[in-house]
Length: 338
Image (cartoon, rainbow, N blue to C red; front, side, top):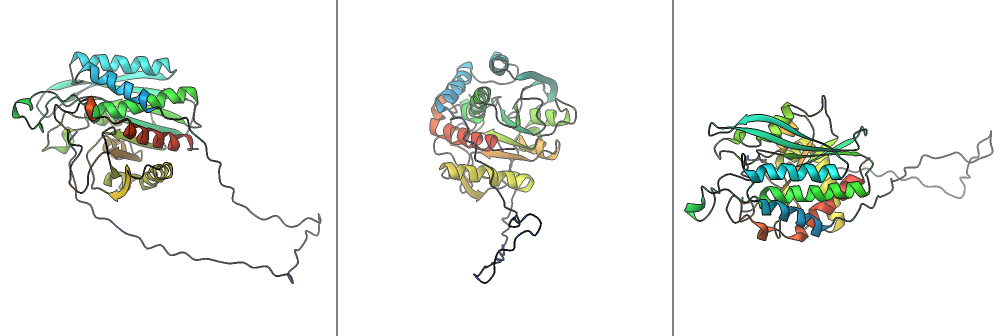
């Protein structure tokens, strides 16, 4: 997908820490409770126990990515698109989720109207505390960044840019079925994310915009949302994206600290990138749910992964190590949420 960059500046805060020390000498005996004869109770802060989440299986996630790649480009109106929707429905239903396809119509920048098919899977619907996980599954209809000019009217395979995030979430769903977290989890696979015009930031993310304006449940709320986009390439880097930091900085810290704890700081880097136009924008600004974008982006070169929006965004772009880093970090966050 193409994201429209906006300039952002880093704001640094100076934190001052005041340390207060208490001492007790032998000349200060412990004062007993005169009523019970017991020493007075003191307030203690107990750290909540760490929950070890299920092990994320990168081979399984890769298989889900491959299954989508084998369908061909999932562009609107194509057989591959319809096949993908049916594939997602079958997968989530088999895991016991409440599944629905949210349908609607949206107009694209070229004057065409397309049906939106957002696939929504709900786990543990009774839980009041909910986490929303999202990715887009559609492929860009034109490989406008392809180095071969003749290929620029062909559709993108959309394997890293689309299928990778979906594959990770399909594996997360499988593990939720095996061991349920304390919170409810909603997974939304957005349609029509990648059918945009580079000169119009509002022409992108049509499926998520439709959902944000027409929530699948009245007054739906989640504690926060996590978006996965382009999360499968070798040596991927995920900087702290500007829109995410602005709307959900505490969630950004939660995710990046979890990744660091797991040894994935080479993927989840602490440098901040500018604001991007992606599916988390409607979630933040319309649905008013704090949303974080885990997005492959090289902030030094202002580039996404090399095969971005080309006919070379195929299965060869995917590295299981990257899928593992993203998936296990996601599991760590979900299973330690209250």
